[in-house]
Image (cartoon, rainbow, N blue to C red):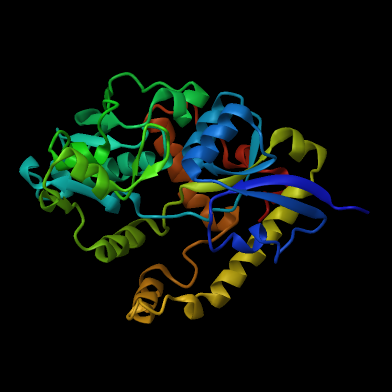
Length: 337
């Protein structure tokens, strides 16, 4: 019997690459992969539903499902970060510690994106910074934003602003037009990634005045893990609803293939460290000490506390009107995993 051929879009990810290059293949399925940056992937999928299997923002997925969009998730979470620990601040803002963010101006790529969801939730619940006591500045335009594709609008009571077209999060932070932001990367108005230092130099500003809100990110990661027990996930994978209903076995076969692909990555990890990263093995050992042997667990059983939290945050922040049950969000074939 010929294998089922399905379109599959994802960013490059070491834990998923064996599926993208075909060295791991789901049983009964031939994937036709497309590499795409997440910001573009999510907009395309939410707007046009063009791929049968896609990487998907967890926050946008919750919003899309609450609005009746026909997708179903697989409990595979290949992208995780301590997103709040990536925040930087301008030294002239008077910020000395995370709780000082109250009353300040925070820049985000997009208000509804998962990174922003986790930042708001962590600042509020761990550091006492209410989302209603800061001003939010969003960079992406409505035309190219995930919110533009889902019809999202900010909840009532939020102080919400758009960053002008001739500026970026990075340029506004370095010029102290906002106080806090994650500037690990900046976006152009055409939704392409741009180098933050180039954009800052073009608009002036003193980068030495921008400092990390959490100077010791490893220490903050250890604190978060001790308190919460997981690394926050920001992406999953989703199957178009019509495809899942037509092939109810597909989600389980995909899940097994994702697990196998991650195992390949784990087996190669220590040997794949770049030779120029002289202390790579020491950093890897420290990472395992803080996060354990597998900071990227798949399946619902291993991720229930994290999923319950992100659902709670999404509802609490006014992104979704009601809290769905976890079983409603994932393919039936994966509910026992």
